[in-house]
Image (cartoon, rainbow, N blue to C red; front, side, top):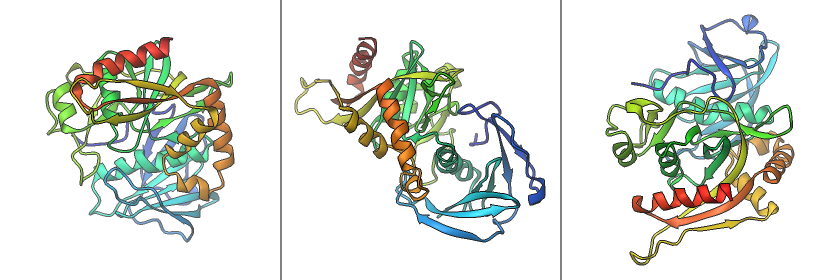
Length: 325
């Protein structure tokens, strides 16, 4: 089992993988379709460096560099991953290249964690490091740093019967009525081995999300686990997750504290994927406006709870009560 391009829409976009093409044959723009081209050789054109990444992935590896470039008559951006993969983001396509030493899992793993989020950012659709589920048809997101418990909490919500909207990366868009919505992401949850064993019963045969870490990509529906949202959901709430080590066995306090609009926007900016690149591209003013609109439509709160599996049912109940309150 390995990571590959999905055959169904992801984040509202249908991916169409086509063979390597000369630049004059790049596909024409089609609504809701993004072509992905697997290049057989390294990206051949000159590019002008914009920024070195200040973003590190879940394994602590700096992602790479970003440059402006052209392909034929299309202007684009070249994302070069330090491990060797390259992605040329154009208006109608993402061109992908990896040398032989870069695995398929790494190529497509960085596609979804770095190249694709940047592609949405270039379209004015913020990408946040957040997991999202649907509670009664409304989006509820969990945000924290890598290893902060977001993925485990998201997986527990899915195990409890809530629909998965997105895991790890959530894209925020506007619908035709001006509502901020979250479209369904890839049909998978990233789980640590302990989580996969508890919820699915195994982990060894699931692909790693990165060669240097044990976290696995577990498909939704495997062994009957979980269900996927089939359409975008309007946002209801975003929770900044903070786990703490209880001082005593009786310390089971769960706190949910609202943030002011200004605090909320600052925290959401911190949770952005590839934070440094949007700044280098001059996208930050528009992103701040978008996130301000998100905060006006959905509550943003701190969710603080004790670490440990035994507390997660209470956390789920507290979140559901808060969302419905």
